[in-house]
Length: 215
Image (cartoon, rainbow, N blue to C red; front, side, top):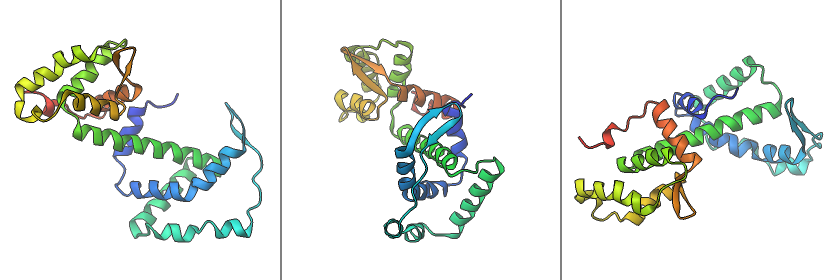
């Protein structure tokens, strides 16, 4: 069974900061390989991917992929240590084929991107906006913008007038919409899958919302 995303996110958060650089290198170096692999896929099944054989790369193609130059963009001793450690870990786990490595590292990079996205949202979101997400998570048919304003925004405005004086309700809701945490459907606002995963991330990773709550 695939591990829940919150567990993968927690694992990513304990990695060294240098993994961010590794992610950048991976995407820059392996993007042509990933695109080529996707183009050759014939079948996806329980046994994995089935692709047509790769064509021999021409000398012209090799010149168009200056791998060494791309590698130098982020070259440093710590990064090289991490590359060796990652390669050794893949070998230890029996991940030997290039296709499997691409699949696994792409998944890890996607998890890492989500973790940084959730962290960025966590640093910017208001407590009452988290309450909206929690509220909508219990009402899967959604709620009206008018009711959410009365329940959450107006209350926050009364308690913290200095903070909300220049923060309109439109911008307040706009933050949740623009980050993909909520969406509008049939006149109501609903929590998205991203919003649900964000709440799970807060709960499972131990991210406290106490600092957002009135004392």
